Length: 381
Image 1 (cartoon, rainbow, N blue to C red):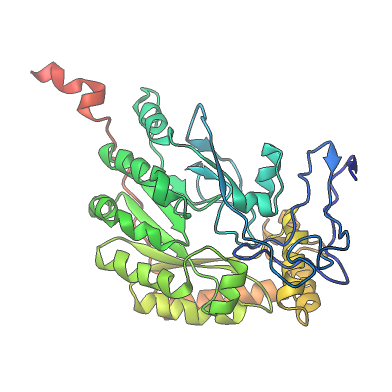
Image 2: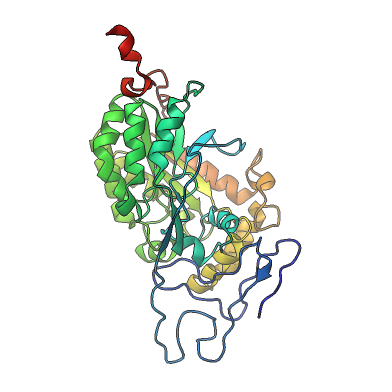
């Protein structure tokens, strides 16, 4: 039965008895209504299920995999401005909303509430694609008032998630960036980026691009559960080697580091990435804003029940007693001893593996509107 939503958002807490298990090939175990909905809906067991409200019927048979639904979105602009003090860029592009990778910890999950959808299974299965992105980018870069700055991609959802194979929006965007000699950075978990090595190599030769691959673990079972539709860890290491061999500056993002779950792997991941040609690195610590916290806790109690309480205790210590507090965990000096230790370990590993060398800034000076658009060549004919 539907009931009125509370005036303020209070995310549902994971079940103390039996957390919902994720659906096959998906990260989230539940699909609670978005925080802006006028009604709150929750699945209940009617006696025919397995007691979780989703997952299996009473004879033990699994529910069929959820299909991915794609809606075409027609935005008016494609470059998004950003003024957050916590990131190092002021503009980005997201060719897709939602992400089929299904990473249970994804901080972008709550953005699906703006579409009237759940941050849970909806975020992974009800996606929005922007096929007009290339034309919009060309129009915006051609504006006489446009001032070039590095555009970051992969900052919210992965631009190389599986549906990119069909839509090829990212390839179109890169083609436009290349034509305009416009710098761009990419963060991904997907081996699919290797498809675009031809464009990226040309841009890299002009110092117009660099990429970074996020690797959280080398444990295949953990990766399959935590990031169900992202490329496997071996495939991510392979893309480092392929991009590096093509002359493309490639780095490794060890994150998010989850205290007590995968942070012990950080140095080993960095060492292997360096051996394969990665030239820089970064790390993040898990963030659990809004709906992400209950979804992550549901998954954690299903995947690692004996460690769940200890892991959450570390996370709350990093956030001043809360599941997430950006002022505490990201603003200014790091206050948690465990977070400080991870930072110290990362700095030592960066020095040991050669990741602390100064990077050359991407070149903004080459930006120009192609003559077939600007018509400038006509002046000299």
